[in-house]
Image (cartoon, rainbow, N blue to C red; front, side, top):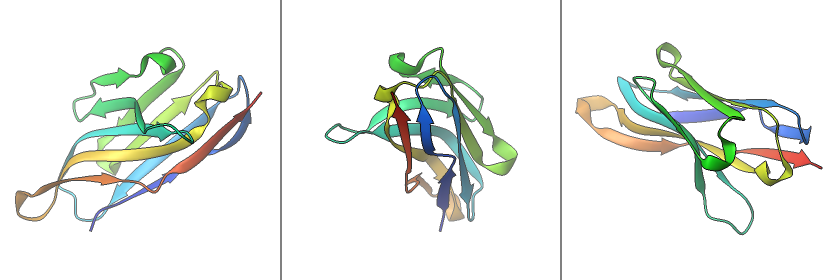
Length: 121
């Protein structure tokens, strides 16, 4: 069984920074892409940033220039550096691992449990 464990959320003032981490554990042979999503109350879950195993990145327009996603393939860990945070960044942030190759070449997607990020004005 593969598990994703997130850390680094919390309360920060507008303009501040936070760094989220997400570590995947279990029987993992490879992970295609890893990403961060967020969901604010009353809203749908949305993609924040995504990084492939080759290092290609993509970002939501709302976070471009402020957030940076990175990845350590050897540790199956993805990071999200969030700078210049705004109150509208307040949400539960979820980590996702896409096409995780496990036993017998089977591929699955996995989600973390979520970590709360609250930005006060």
